[in-house]
Length: 343
Ligand SMILES: *Cc1c(COP(=O)(O)O)cnc(C)c1O
Image (tube, rainbow, N blue to C red; front, side, top):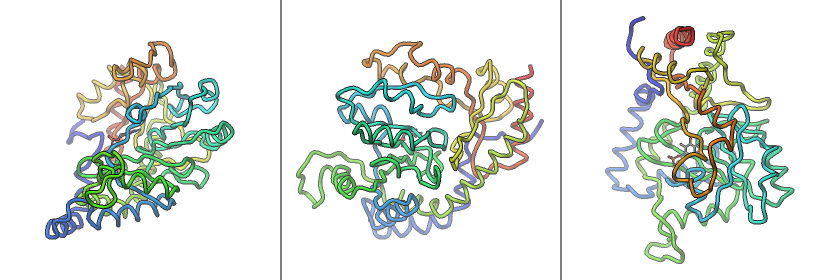
């Protein structure tokens, strides 16, 4: 088998598609020296809110699921995932306590959990739903976009995400005008009017240059997500019935955006090493389950507490997945994977 390596994510191919638009946009921002919260930021926020089917988007660079909860001064309570590594609604009830305020489902790999069940339970128990939409830009469930089930959704524009910046960036989308207004202040050191700080905020502004990149990519997001769906269907075909390879499933009602295509295999580390040795950029998302990170050791969880998550962490293998992945590249990935699991 010859040819160049196949990366896990190909950002160069994406850049080639938008290069001219980005260069022209950068030139404009630089000429205007509008680096901080320039008009391109608001323009992107409006475009992205419209794309999400929600009234507000606040460009931000801060929130990550469990640590975001800790930083907010709250205590995250972890529940085990289901076999798709999504929030299992049936496990929530048992961990609701008198101080529980919110449920935070993570739309992992590009599809949503059973959000109707999550939202109904949250409503019945008076809890807010805050969605982690970092991997689900453009995903829908029974026609509803990610971010529309809860009071707000955090979206990451980390470079490798379905829509990624050329550096760090993120946003919060929400249907609440109150939350949007508060976030606009908080992200700018608590200030709405320059040099007036009625409350303590932080520096979490979206760069104008990043807004230019994000606007260029947003125009192509539906097309790129469609290309990801075709690539996922092609992997499904190429790998159907291969002994020892469990394929990912799309839950009924979900429009998946395939941020990652994650299979399960036994002796995963061996299989991964063989693929990498052949120049195939397979990876693991994620090798350590949440509850076993040192950063969360104060929560008192131990190995064995979340068997589904721990089993997943030992078996999952992310195959190369990006909009510009070609059928030939996928055939090479599939052939290499078959060899790796067979021997
Ligand atoms: C990428 C990611 C984040 C964090 O995004 P940052 O932009 O690094 O803050 C949070 N949650 C999930 C599920 C992610 O994939």
